[in-house]
Image (cartoon, rainbow, N blue to C red; front, side, top):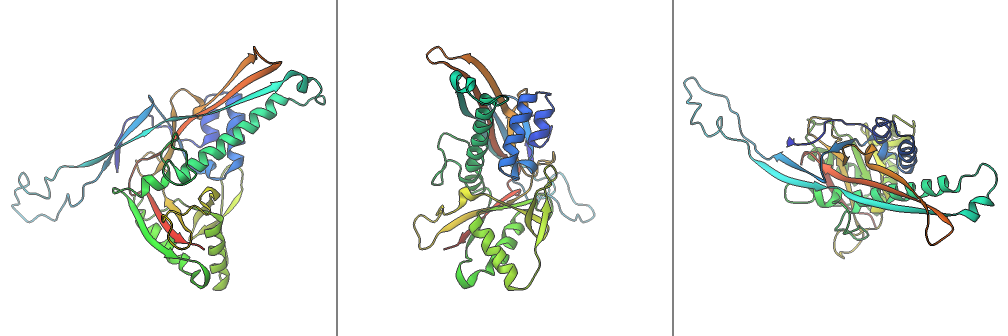
Length: 325
């Protein structure tokens, strides 16, 4: 469990943007959602200020069956106070700037808005950059040290859950089932419910190979907004994040050891993960037409997204480690 300060609204990215009745932000949000189905389901939560402090409940053995006459005031179990582990999650600014030459706009076919195309392209790049940061964070190869903390460094720290490395390569492909089971067993914030698995296409292809080898059928999950289907494992959707692909977390051991994740989405009960954004900014999306360039015959629009990954419960996210090559 977690005790936190901040907003309580929990909406998907497109709904969060529409909540502000900002058509430009809505369009950017829709563009971001097309990049990865994961953006359809992870909640976006507003916060006040630049960061949020989460006090995660780290206490166990706080209750007991009491015999008649037990002195409740002095009993070390019944009167045991709650202890917490404090984490801070800080928003980061992800920026892109569209520069459209006025001559290029003038000679474009009728009805073609070059600025709209450029803004959409910047939005897609923002979506990919943020999704990459979710996977790799500031520590894994390819992550951005100026960005926000990713799922691996959050879930692999001393306060959370990590499985041992499982070899699912070659003839060991069926061990992917055990790996998924181990990760899901570590996600206990919703008492056994697990909302998602995230892995690279390397791991997903091994999973498909294992399913075919036992003659089983595939399980699917339909995303609620676009109706896109993704593969599932025991009802838990599997979202592909190929920024994990080929990233060796083992520090040079033989074979490629990739990270993969299982977890829950925050639902207002302090039990999962969410993307955070500044309260008052549509889903953290800020699109500003800056007008004409002083140096060039061009118009400028800046596209920004202020966001970070936050984990409200250390039992709501687990990391697996798999040898895939």
